[in-house]
Amino acid sequence: MTDTTLPTPGLRSTLRHLWQDQRVWLASALILAALAVFDAPQAADSALFAGNALLGTAPFLILSIAIAAWANATGADNLIAKAFTGAPILMIGLGALAGGISPFCSCGVIPLIAALLAMGVPLSAVMAFWLASPIMDPSMFVLTAGVLDLEFAVAKTIAAIGLGVFGGTVVHLMMKGGAFADPLREGIGNGGCGGAKIRAPKPVVWRFWTDADRRAKFGKTALTTTLFLAKWLTLAFILESLMLAWIPAETVTAALGGEGLLPIVTATLVGVPAYLNGYAALPLVGGLIEQGMAPGAGMAFLVAGGVTSIPAAMAVWALARPQVFALYIGLSLTGAFASGLLFQLWTQMA
Image (cartoon, helix red, strand yellow):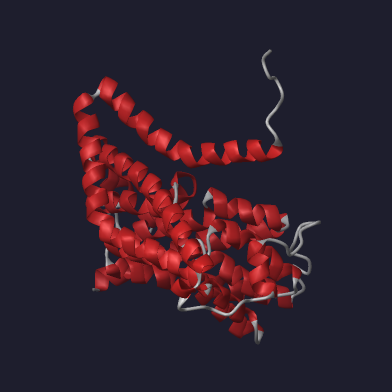
């Protein structure tokens, strides 16, 4: 007799997570399979391009993975709690700085933000952290320097912190006028793994290798980060190979190259729907810049896409009231355009 019972909730959750983990690999496999059927030489070229690109970025991948695993194993991410104490202006600056350098993953940021707001931390400081966090972290810095260059990585870090300070200051001024007295949606509390770091921050254990549990945490984080980066970068490099092969350089130059405001405006708006993932976007932007994309447009694309990407935007929508969400998007696009414009001016002066 056939068993027709439904999977238990735990099994359903496991299957869902397995599907989410494998669908990026599946997308890469399907692209290569389709190419093998319709354009076999391009399939071979794309596979070779992706393999060589992964080998070329391997040193930076290893370093970024080690940083993420070290931060999790030592508990260095608990230092974020210290950024939200003090005067409002100081909290905005520290919140932006913490967002720009913090190693928090997407699963930790969402409950952390809810915890901060529920505990009464001003929205201005939380917004500063919220805007800066999706754009840069230590792993992202290393990979940006490797895939693009060090100047771009430094500029993107400054853009992340600057956007946080800008957004936090705007919210602070609006709050002084009586806005955003209750920013959270009904029923949102301060639970979750990120919230626990704020409610009861634990001391950092720098010598984590002396603790078996922390060594295990280091290994688990290293493995999950390796798989995460590998699947997204593989897909990104395959897409980059197709972009270089099929999109004429003059088309990119006409739309996103040259001087002036239009390429930066276009990249800011295109970054919202076209952004795949912070790590996957790097080689795509690198390929576009090689084809004539203005550096400022590349910066605007990365900043706008990072802050308004589906995971980041959904986190804001799920936690905050619609007016807070609308302000978040407005600040993101404004800051991305300003970041791209300033970076373009800097590259022209250098």
